[in-house]
Image 1 (cartoon, rainbow, N blue to C red):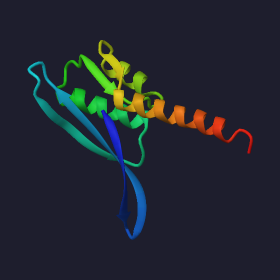
Image 2: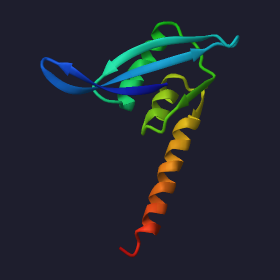
Image 3: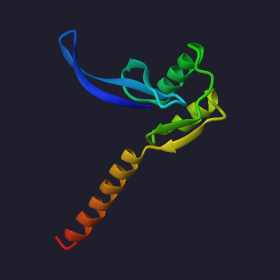
Length: 113
């Protein structure tokens, strides 16, 4: 689960939108896009609606969610699929680690300036 952010033209204005994407992988390893939803920006409240929609459409059980670190997302998942495991996406972990390392190195390099 993740959201992709886009700038689109809406009634002559450029606005930001978030495309919420859910990819499912079944026990046999087959991948399927379970849905794409469009929202104003990424939020755990919107994700809660997406998860409820998936459950309404027949998703009974999810073994593992792989997600970013969005505040409140874990709670949204636990509210709809309480037995599921939740894992932080390795790409998001790596990206955050690199950003933290860069900030620390930047502070050390320019400490005396």
